Image 1 (cartoon, rainbow, N blue to C red):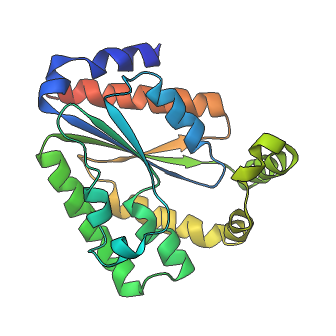
Image 2: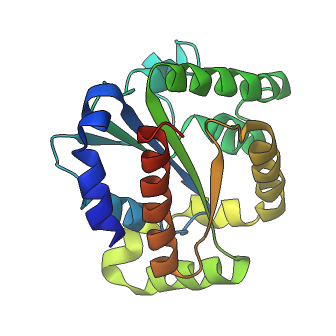
Length: 217
């Protein structure tokens, strides 16, 4: 149902001629971001979207202001960019792992809010998702990945190391949502223990946000 609705909205003249769509996916390790993104893009013309997987910055990206590498992928009107992990890495992994100074990640909240405000002002619809699984469900999925040959590439030593810092990441997520969930680009928290429920909620949220914006609400 919601995939069909999203397909219609992507072809709506009010979207194609006036807006772009930015989908930002963050979440716990093994929360199902990749599978959810696949269900979203099944509704779209492949010429209309790009998926940007965000990893550690390259030397070129480190030589630029922090948000430069995300500005490069901002979609033009009528197009969609899906970020698989995002600019929020600065206040999550970089904060917890000590990859930037405290002053850098504290300053980033305001920088990110300004960044997203500018996007919205220029016609972008910014939809942000945090997918959360319980600690027990994450452990179950980690073990399944280790046992399943074609899923084994998904589990790394880094995933196990991050799990040991569960509480630190939980605090960082709470701070992130509190400080960057704004009226025009709010966070949507996704209960992701049930993958089907999570995928449907993401699709429904995208459709509802698009409809509200296109109807001028």
